[in-house]
Length: 196
Image 1 (cartoon, helix red, strand yellow):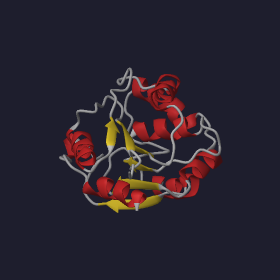
Image 2: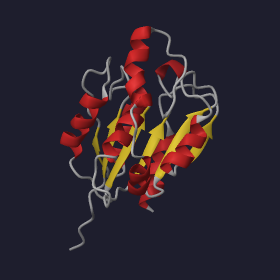
Image 3: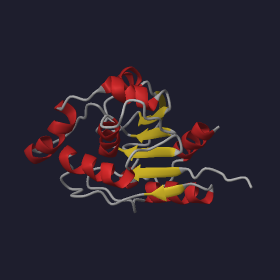
């Protein structure tokens, strides 16, 4: 009897986000149709995302991933995934990760309150070498040329720090409902390509 491995995808939404956002919901539905098991949790305290809350939440949810485990992050959800990965044993292997509107540095954060939320995510050191080793070249980043929050310089950071392949998209803003994004075939295709 041929037993296929179960591919599991964790979709991590962004700041003040939800797994019910149209693009993330579309992606989850498409993955389920193609045999993936999908976990798309509502992250805790989404209006005030903290490393000390989000990373332990992922540790409890995921445990130790393996080569049949995939991740999708949106915006600050990408940072949460990176910081989760750096807590794993160095020999850990994953199936792959897709980072949508992911950033190492962020712009246009207007209020003092928002700057206080962002500062730890930007300024707390990460073990990029460990993260890069765990990603093992299986990372794709989708960036848009008109994203109000993610500066173009993030492209080089993703290549250098994560060893990621970067896909530059046109006119998709921050890949959210405000930008009119309700589906994202590029993210779906990237996940399927990791399985090949």
